[in-house]
Length: 90
Image (cartoon, rainbow, N blue to C red; front, side, top):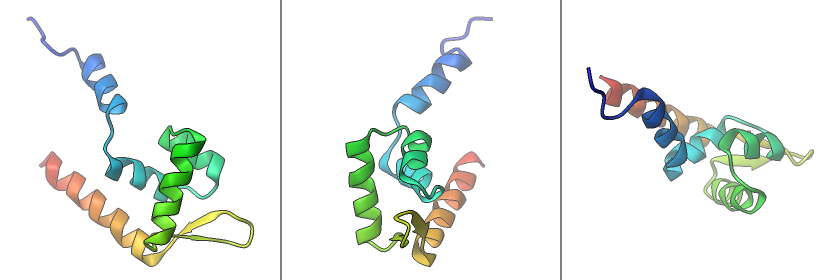
């Protein structure tokens, strides 16, 4: 049987081209900037831009220790993303 898109190739493509929503959901799951950078696979400049955006729109809050916590609004946003993923799979 001939396979046009081997599973490995399609999996690599999925990680190479992520949309902004996928990146934001990765960020909302973490708390420390270095962990966010690793999990979301972003460089420092990209991470700062996303964090600034998420804080300015109320999805994240900054603690006194300069870590990030997800707000109620951010948790709802993350839930909507997860629901959309489940509906896409069906």
